[in-house]
Length: 147
Image (cartoon, rainbow, N blue to C red; front, side, top):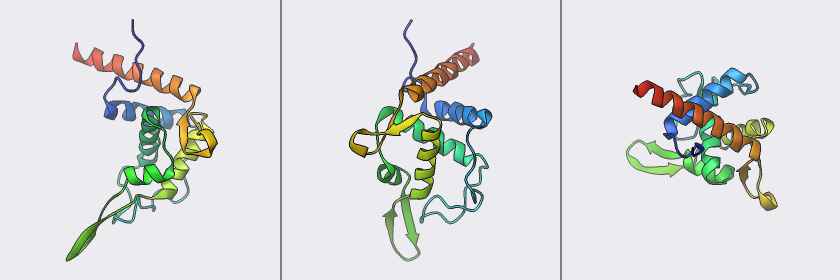
């Protein structure tokens, strides 16, 4: 039987299961002011979902599973258009401090480590193992719901 990886399961399902695992484990603490922070200059309000930090950490972990990247790359991923009224829209990068804190949280869990020569972050062996286990669990639940 072939082992299931985090790439084999639907990304939304994997992120949801990873976020649930992070919240349930109790090892991830919400940063101070998490209810007030905006996720970028292009946003008007703070996130509505109270579990947004767990979801962001889970999404970053899944993304690092596929491709190593750093804070700058994550800012590009989570950027958006800044609406300026009657002036043309501009693209603007996402919040760097949220990406940085999420990476630091994942490093604290030993899921992420610094890349070679200090460039970006990569997923660690422990992180790959845990994400594969969570993905296999998510896939088994998805198969069980079909029948």
